[in-house]
Length: 184
Image 1: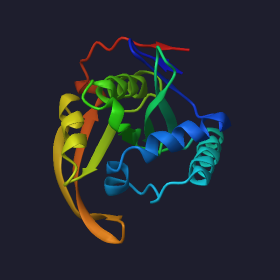
Image 2: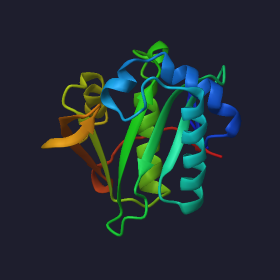
Image 3: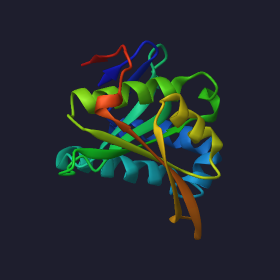
Image 4: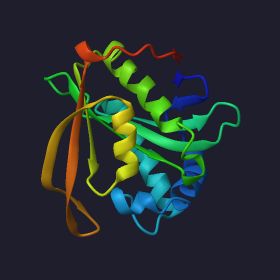
């Protein structure tokens, strides 16, 4: 568990399914820029949590819920994928509830998670990609000061259509942020 000033990033539990379903369902952008099924159902949330728990055991990915520290409400998700890379690199992705946008929550979560990835997971490189038509995600990436590496053309298939994606990366040696968080 990672705790910031306003957030708790924690592992999924079976009991999170209903609240995860509600968070995803309230945010139409999730369907536009991710592979989240549409329409999203409670059974989808349960299956997703089952897969996350499997990833914890395999230590291949580290998917976490982003929760409001004061209320405990689920406001987003964040993940680092492909932790087993021999090249000490992984890819980060995130989602945020519509009701939590514009407050800096996902940037706060991403800063702590990147710092954790470099210091605790011993990664050298964190990659972040987003669909070229997803300006909100791109703003988060820019606030992290990730270096832009270009566009991968037709790199994503979303809802049966090819999409280009922006590619960014952060390197451990360039990460100079003083991020305040606790690991529990």
